[in-house]
Length: 198
Image (cartoon, rainbow, N blue to C red; front, side, top):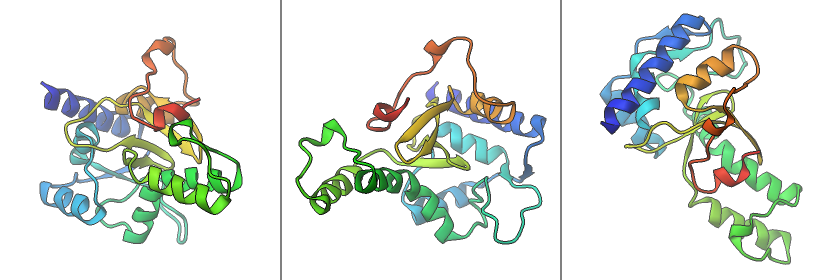
């Protein structure tokens, strides 16, 4: 049942991308490609994200030279850029620790020097759930056997919901600023990151 629901959400998200026409959609990733990507980059896609990318790989239309792709190209993208995108959520938190006095209450008392505080934050951030880019700075938590997480828009420690799940996210992203009739559908699901959602 869990795998079926994750596959349903991912497939619905893929249909919405095609219907909205906001990307070129290449053939989906194969099982061999998923295995290579997850091995190379050290994470696992959630079930809905995996089904989404298996249905079709969205890529930017007419990308310009030197322009960062909004859709991560997991098949042919630059490995260094993909690594940077995977690291960006954690690096954004560390930036705010160093430059904007951010400190999580879950980390205990803040050390008295900047270098020690950054070292503690780096150690703590190594244990938080991996966020995987979906589009631009919108991310889903990774993890085989998981699905239905809200999509988060992440800029350093400024984090907001951008969709109740992957399918809803596609609608919210490409039909104007996000809005929900029933805000009770917005729920935090992943350790650490849920504490930062506005």
